[in-house]
Length: 464
Image 1 (cartoon, rainbow, N blue to C red):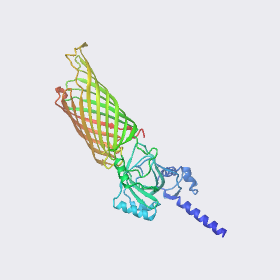
Image 2 (cartoon, rainbow, N blue to C red):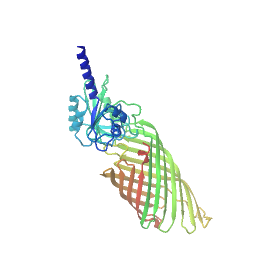
Image 3 (cartoon, rainbow, N blue to C red):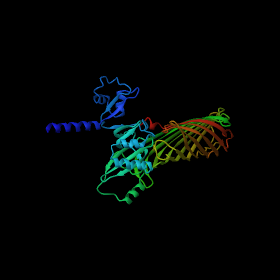
Image 4 (cartoon, rainbow, N blue to C red):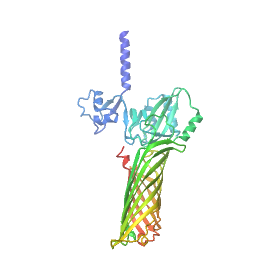
């Protein structure tokens, strides 16, 4: 009898160990270290789980390797190893879920009964399926805490548990987790009211440290060169913007982020008649960011100075210092909400520079010109524009850009239209633009030009 009991225990132990492992078939050019990394293991742990491998540097294509239960798999690259459009039914049936739960979730997916959900840094899942039906246990989202990814979420409730199933839009890697049902039920009316006041769809998991989205910083850089076609001379522009956020508050319309921002712009060029000009503007002030699902609205009011100077090469030279109040409004759309704060579908902006005071010094052949004879110009200006993305080519997005600007000093109206190509994550943008300037009281400023432009958001790659 004792031997029989020991035999039963041994069988159960072997069965349990077998369930904690899975088998992986080696593909061409794969190493033990590469396979181990996929499962959140070290190559030594994987080697110990496969004692028949005498040399860890020698494994062959088609060889079967046992994958032990990993402690935690850090999901650092949501776009890598995508499950894509493979059979979701097969994926769900691979999960360690009750059969009735599997059937319910499959039916919900077929009937498109999911709701929007956003995955953030620190979210954990019991299981997730990658690429060619590769199942990984104990997955934890480990990317930047300033990035959310959109997903569809499904749920199935039993007497004591709620099972959640998600499909991230960026990769479609199906995953699930479970939660215990609280003893005290929340009234349905309270849940609906909370959803209306929340920035994102209600988190399926209770809020924890690091779960609340707090934008830390963002940086934008831009530059461009305009080649003259008719009338107007060539010109360059360049600049950058940085916002630093240090406070977050919930609001009825969304979640608000407060901080401080700074903007720097520079320009230089030559008119058709050979007048060289250059200048720069630097402003700093508070910035507010409001986010709600697939939209983001920012506003900023800043104070700073603008410096302009020019010379005609014949003896005239002038410099002007201007105090500026800068007002900026932007509205970005992320379409269906996938890759929130990462990939835009539409972006627009409205900027005003108000000249609140100025002083000018001008010279002719080194002699000061009286201010009454050469007055300072009013540097007030306004501009608006937008980019609309409508196409995709592999990892690139394509779209159209349109801009317009009005300068108070010379009554000039500038119109810009062109094409833009952007990386899928909006890290870099390249543009080809056509510009027309008209109505300026300085006739040599009017004309047409074509530009090559470049925009960069380095924090999305460098500061992750």
